[in-house]
Each structure stands twice: as structure tokens, then as C-alpha cells.
Image (cartoon, rainbow, N blue to C red; front, side, top):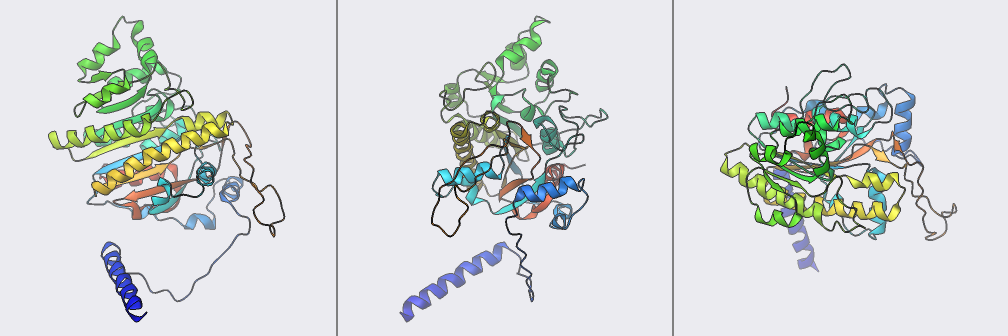
Length: 416
């Protein structure tokens, strides 16, 4: 027994020693004030912020993002956006998985972001995407511009100019609001022709998604062939997902659907995880071959939002499982490439999902649960941010969604 105790003690000491090398020495704590809001969820705190017209509350003092300057070893950022994904969607996935470990559980640090736009307490994907991409809040419907029309650059655009490779992966068409927020500048997200033109000038190195029909429409009036134009910009153009297997480097665009890719129920398969893995492979090769500083890539689980709008529980859970698989690819990559930061977040929550107990007598054993959708629209609740890898410890607390973008730009030293 003494030998076992000694072994455990030595193992614990070795673990603590290894951890101490990774982290700063813990501060001396004499007093702990543990405050429990009985029944208080993220929605309750969000409601308080909204009712107070976003004036600072005591909760907002849990904030340190402004202290971030730079992180010298970070040169790869993988930003993963679950469109419409709130805490309840993640909770539903955990319950549906029997609480088996998920990729979300690997997060080393957690933060919270406020999602309101410049003109609405409930954002849309365009305004939220712009905030996450550029660091500026804007009006609903606007992409890559401030409310007064000033063009603002995304972290991808700034990174590209600073010598980084860049990439986009989505399960929607590439001209849709979230991916477009990283390269387009339009007053209305419905200006699909202009968004297509902006992509052509973006210089993004790798892009996988849908959008053939939208590109074709944009260039139809001028009589130009969008495929020829993409090739002239140096892209290898793919139309079949199987073609990804034959590409290992260079500028690549995969247009795998006329508009959105199919849902998982319709047979999309493991596209998102495979496309994420392939994009990482290509960007890594390009960084090496072209002596780039690193890369910035955005991956969107686009159709979590679609299924949530439809109040389709099984469809939403399928999209969440699919997104979790893509997160695993990114986190595994970060394990193999230590200078990588994986950031998992959402642009807004969709459906007002709640997970109530079937009974109100909590002295009973398991009483079952119910999944309750409150709306078919978006909500104004704060959202979690899951961080993993290099620099994860520098982003925590409550912040604006725009501040998250600024923090990431500072980490790779492209902030203005």
C-alpha cells in the first residue's frame, strides 16, 4: 500500500511539474467568494444585459481580452463557426451522445461573447460574421462594412497581405453571409453578384463549399466564364469531392454544389471533416513551399442554423455531430502543430432551444427530458467560445463578438 501511495504521489508530482512549465505560478489565494445564482442560465445573464441596454454589469467585469498584445509562437489560426449554435445545441449533443467525450470537451479555455449588432439586439449572420471577421460591429444584412459604409478588412484579408496563407470551408455556398464576411464588402448580403466579384479579388488560397450557380449568374451578363476567370487567378477548380484526393498544394477552389451542399440526411457524408483535413494539408504545404508566416482558416458548420430554423431536432443533432467531427480534425492538427490555435464559436443562436425536465419534482430519479424550441428565428443570447492550442489561455471572460476578432488579429500581429 505504501508503494502504491508513493507511486501515485510521485506521478502526481511529475504531472504537476510538467504543468508548471506550461503555466505561470499560481497566485496565493486567501479568500474565495463562491456566488451561485440558483436557476441562472446564460439566457438570464443575456436578458439582464439587453434590459440594461448593454451598459456594463458586474458580469462584464469577467473580462481580460483588452490585455492581449501578441503571442509570439502563434502562426496558425483555425476559426470554426457553428452557425446558429448556442450552448443548448452543444448540451443537446452531449445528452444525445450519452455524455461520452466530445471534441468540445477538449477545450482548454472558455469565453463568452455578446452577439447584438449595431442596429439590432438580435443579430443576423452577416453582421455577426462581419464582427467575427473584422472586429467591427455593423448593421444586420451588411458585410465587411461599417454602418456608415466604411470598408473594413477581415482577419483573412489582413493575414494574406501580411504573408499568411488563407482558407475557407463551409457546407453552404461560398457567397453566403458567414463565409462572405471574410472577403466581401456589400451593404446587403443579397448582392450575390458583387460578393462573387469580391471573392475573385480576395486572393484566398483554399476555398471549399458550394456556389456554382451563383458564380455563373454573376458573370452571365458580361458573357464571361467564371471557371476561366478562377483559373486565371491561379485556382485549380474542383467540382467533385473525390477530386480533393488528387490535390496536395497550391490555390484550390472546390465548388461542390450549385448552391448549398446537401444536408446530412440527403447524403452529404463526412464532407466537412474531410474538407477541413484537406484544406489543412494544402495550407500546410503552401506555407512550407511559399515560405508563408502561417495560415488563417475559417470553417463553418453552416447547416446547424438551417436545421434549427426548421426546428428539426434530429437534423440539428446530425449537423452538430458533423461539426464536432470537423473540430476533432482541427484539434488533432493543433496537437501535431504546436503553434496552432483552434477557436470554436457561433455567430448567433437559432431556435431558442431549451432542454427542460419532464417533471418538476427533482427529488425523483431520472424523469426524462424534453427538447423545446422557442422560435424559428435567431435569439439574442450570449454564446460560448471554445479555445484549444497556442494562445488559448489569453482569451477568456466576457467580450463583444468584435473583440474576439481583434484578439485573434493581435495574436498573429495583423491588428491595426
